[in-house]
Image: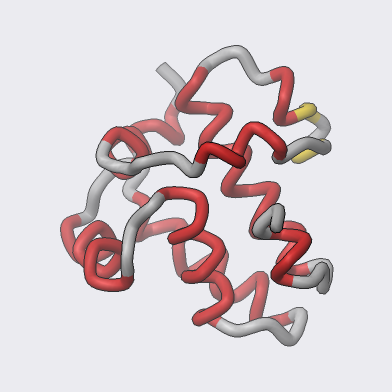
Length: 113
């Protein structure tokens, strides 16, 4: 089991916020991306953050967007579409979406619309 699986989502979330805000994006946009991927609404996302859910628990309770399979590209030198472990792939999907947001891509592109 990889260490990130047992890391709390809430402990990583501020790093996502910092990353996107440094590039001129907002926390609201980050939350929109996370909610698109996971199917959480605002209160459910807030509850996940408050509960200290691990990444494993966070994604176990999520209803992954059916269009998430269209997320492709490289994160940390790894192609997200080739990640074999399902949980690690979901985490990499999230990382890829956060990267795209920070790089200034349009929300329509990020949300695969």
